[in-house]
Length: 112
Image 1 (spheres, rainbow, N blue to C red):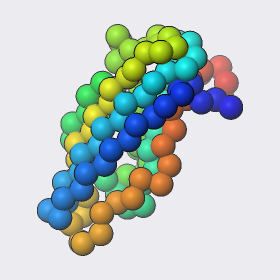
Image 2 (cartoon, rainbow, N blue to C red):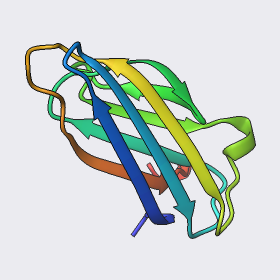
Image 3 (tube, helix red, strand yellow):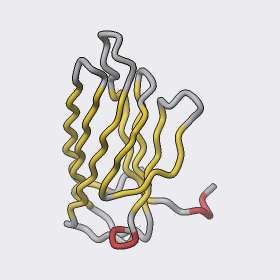
């Protein structure tokens, strides 16, 4: 199990005009020197602002987003809480994107 958190509090707020706001608070359970947070959506989302992390990549459909740490949150220890926030847009067609999966794991470039 690559999971390095004991608790992941996730809040998503969608508006009919296509705005989306997500806040995640991660309680760390293991030491790690680097990490990745990935979210999978049911429809395209375009994030314009993020805080507590940085955008690393998205797939061509903008349904899978991966974020990494800021310099001050790269090395994490058990008990730490990491606050992440995301503001963005989605197509306002009456259906908000569902967040299907969230993943917060240790990143090790040698593992791939």
